[in-house]
Length: 276
Image 1 (tube, one colour):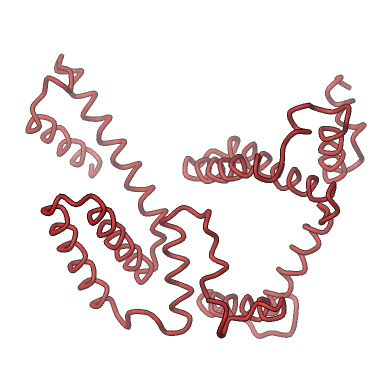
Image 2 (cartoon, rainbow, N blue to C red):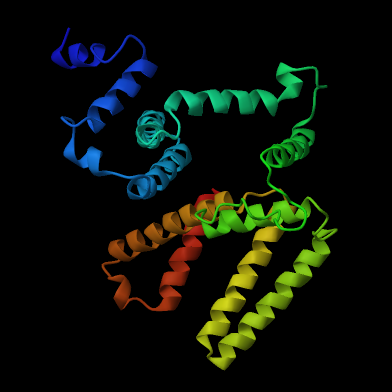
């Protein structure tokens, strides 16, 4: 047995025991100075970064990378849980137990007597169960509280916009069809142009936000995840721009020396090449 395997085996008999003991040792007085100094706020940004790296591995269909990044994301959960345990708030056992109980409660059609549902029916039921859970926790959604209060502020803006819209739609605050959303996009685009013509940067930013919010609403109505759609377009732009760069290099030119018309021609070549 290698020295590394020996060290790992000393941490516990199961992977769950090992990761708990690992974190305890890192946070112990004789452990790692950096790990001991961290607080919830200190490592929050790392938690967000790890979640994005998981998403990136999935987008790249890189299973080796995904396995590693899921471990890094799990480590963040263990880290937060250990800090919470040290201040007497909760432990990793509490987190995992709460998770299992919540998932069982939200899937009565799997673990209880509930009837089988379609995926669409389950989405509706999921929101209803979450609403009941908030009521049980004393979260009043009537007068003093808003349906939007627990939509996390730290979410990426595009994702948060979609969640806000979904939450409002639960009570009927939603366009009845696509026509209303499309008209809203046209309206907001015109207002962006008017703001741009005025040169008022505050107005431009405000109207651009309204336009992005309206486009996000259209994606939601079409059943498209706007975050996924934009990532897909980012990847497409990257592929095509690299094609333009290669074309310029093969022609012995720097991009800065090329006209916009020449670069645009290479861009259209890239689009044609993708369709083959």
